[in-house]
Length: 397
Image (tube, rainbow, N blue to C red; front, side, top):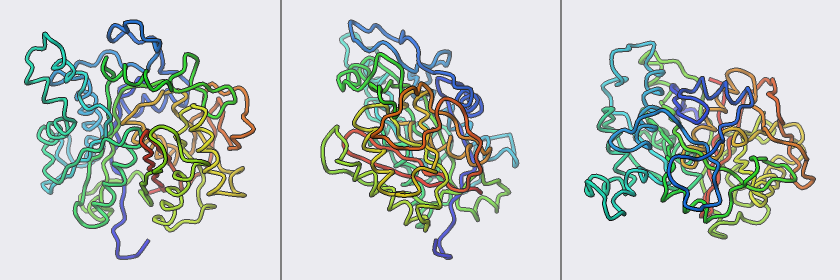
């Protein structure tokens, strides 16, 4: 990294997931190989074949929406951790503006879909939530975040892409602090569309397994506070990790299928390494996108082999979607959090449900039990329908 460019650190983490209502609970669930997937009973399925999901129970809606409640809770935890050394009186870290980048597939559609029914009441209130930026505006107003804000809806690459966008704001001195939150809630509207993709399995989520047959979608939120290192230290904050490199791109190939041989993912990883000024051999662990669909796992494995070459067999790879399910707009942010915790605690959560190696997916998979490891640099991959790819590289603080 150029010496005059600001270093970017992560100083706060927050999460609401089907494994727990905090980062700590979610992390312990991952390390214990717990499954977040169970019967979906949030709404009538009306004959839909997909009946398993990572559903969150016990959190009341906020402003009529469970999605808003998830996002708000994750943001509050991240801000609370970041300022715990300073004050517990309020959530505003300093008087300087904090930017907000939100990532989502469906926004507050769980409330907004009411505007699409005949008996919607009140229609205007629900209709506002059909626009994802309405959630971003509400979060910013409630939490007092007066800096720039944006909403990214880049399918399942949105969370990691939001981190990349936030890092660019700090790198180019447009913000000192950026709160990033990825979130989504399940709804009848969203579930009907997800089922139509035909990417969900009736089995378990088995990333990189020879007999993998698809993913299972989940709901929740994950938030990270990014700061310039100088701003963090000036207020007495504690960096948890450093965001070293990032990249986003688009395959330009197909709306749903990955590019041949994972070319787009490979390019994004190379660009993130260049941004971090790292050689491939400096990466100690990969937190994979790992959806457990046949085409995507193969493409990601091919991309890893193309980028890391002879170093591929020694780099441990995991996919936490095997336990957590696919958290949609929050997938990239929760996987970045898992990467940071791996760096800090020296342990890699397992890829669960793995039984049969796929000879075409030659990655060094951390299968079925946690693995201790000394880590300096972790790369996290994300990809989404529409061809979007996003990669972030995190290092020890």
